Length: 189
Image (cartoon, rainbow, N blue to C red; front, side, top):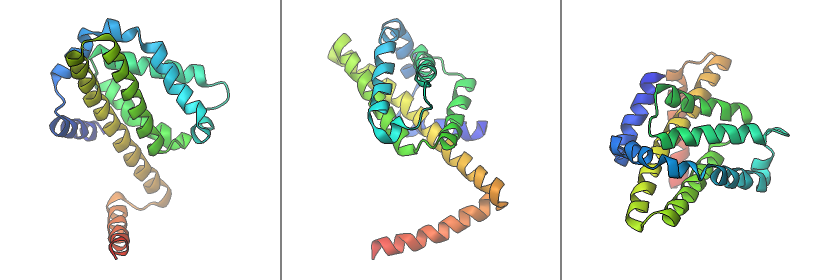
């Protein structure tokens, strides 16, 4: 799993120009960013609870606990010091989402929402050039997180299939390749 996470992060760094300077930039202004925490978390969960398909996912009375989790996540990001424990936790977010029936489309949309709200705050609080630099750094980091979560989701989904069916990953990959080729041909015709 650690090797898988490293491969995802390496791909994100190469494809998305993620660099150490992105983490350093967020760390530099973390005191300002931390002042936005409550507002960003509220907007995030207000959005989830407004949409009927996502409002039904959290358990009754769970919002406070979820807000604490998101707060901790955000504070970790703006610290600019994301360690192996952080990245491993992101990998297992995928497993939690499978268990809670959080479809990836919701998770991806909400990451975009969080990025957008963070960007708005940067443009309200910094000159436009610095706001753009900060927003891009935040997006590169959170896009890497998104990649790890999605890859973890897919990996854990496959592991669950392997465990329940006894069919190993190589066979599952072959079955999917055959079926997806058939579906692609149907799509193209």
